[in-house]
Image (cartoon, rainbow, N blue to C red; front, side, top):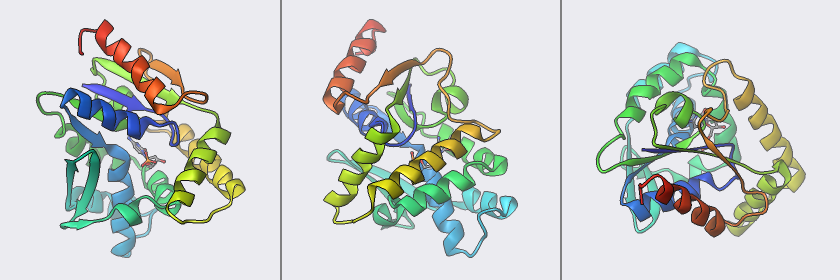
Length: 220
Ligand code: DC
């Protein structure tokens, strides 16, 4: 069990997926669960501050995940929801519902179910602190907010989506603040996490470093 936590734009999702592929382990994108809950609540006309209503949506979420050919797919009632899930609005809405204790409780059991042999790489904000506190390797990725916004900007432009860098920067700052300051399972490194600053590191360099840590622990 390996946990990969940190704010968005640090490369943690890509790193987690690459590690899962390399080890032949399962993969959990817990952020996708929070994004899906917010999306489904919106579709069902449930207000994002209606804690009991959103928690019910979280309990009933008809989601299935698939990994094939290095691609991670999120299927909601059989439909691939990648596009709607990856928008900035979905990220903000996810961060809002993620601050609700009943929603986090509703998703806990579902996340535990991903723990299957031969192992799991779990990506999120509280994987090493709350959901899988006994992970054999805990990673916490950080990077300057400017670099994270620039990465996101490049990614969106690559998809033909034109957003201003300043707006993205503001969005990321607000989301970080909400995720760090919430009272339940805030975004913070576990005391025994290895902290990696990816501001000046490409994903391959980060992966190389982590493989060294895995070898030290006899995992790879
Ligand atoms: O990793 P992401 O950008 O897809 O996550 C979207 C939001 O979901 C994030 O801003 C906070 C929330 N989240 C969380 O609270 N706990 C997690 N384990 C994963 C995500």
